Amino acid sequence: KTAYVKPQIKEIKDQIELQNSQLRTLLKEKSRFEKLVNADAATKKQLDDIIAQIDVVSKQIEVSNGQINVAESNVGTQNKSVLSEVEPLDRKQDILLDQIDRCKIENPIAGTVLTVYAHEGEVTGPGKPLYKIADLDNMILKAYVNAEQYAGLKINQDVKVFIDQSDKTFEELVGQVYWISSEAEFTPKTIQTKEERNNLVYAIKIRVKNDGKIKLGMYGEVKF
Image 1: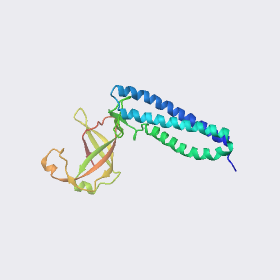
Image 2: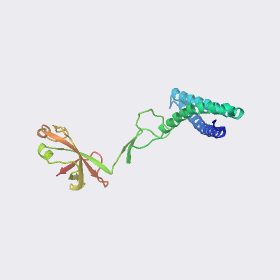
Image 3: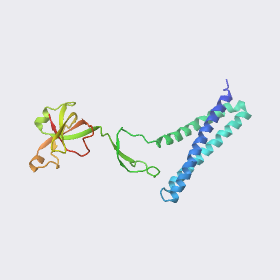
Image 4: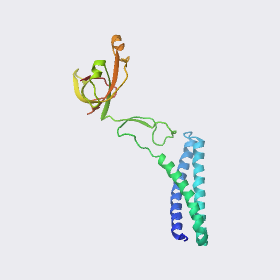
């Protein structure tokens, strides 16, 4: 049984509408990159890549229009040809849509932007960071314990965390141990005395809820 061709024509017309939308977007990008190239803010290759995409989409539109003409003039043979042509065009369309999706920026976490490396309208390359983001509501404190303390530690154990206040007092917070190193190491060089630096210790990481008093880089003291 042969397929009814009108639904296929509608599919192709819908596809052409999408391709025209993609073409309009690419033409806008071409105009923008031409200005950037003239201002030495983008490379000629980036502009050439967009022009190549415009050529691909334009040819796809030509092919799709040709399919409609053939379908309307020869219903009997078009059933087979449309089905054979739509599949590769769908694959090309999927590739273009995937390329568009890759242009979307999604944060890996919810947090606060600390540093901006690229501003709106600037050109950047693949793999280059756009900004630095951190979750300031949940801070991580890295601490070091001796062998005796290490023996009594458990994952998810609550501990007391003390941070300095401006009036030379301490603010007490509650933290939770979520990572314990399995290997001993020498005390880091940031420890004050040489004798302490020569001791073997174990690193641990503690999650601490931050009400805004903890700042990045602050020191803290842990009590079990």
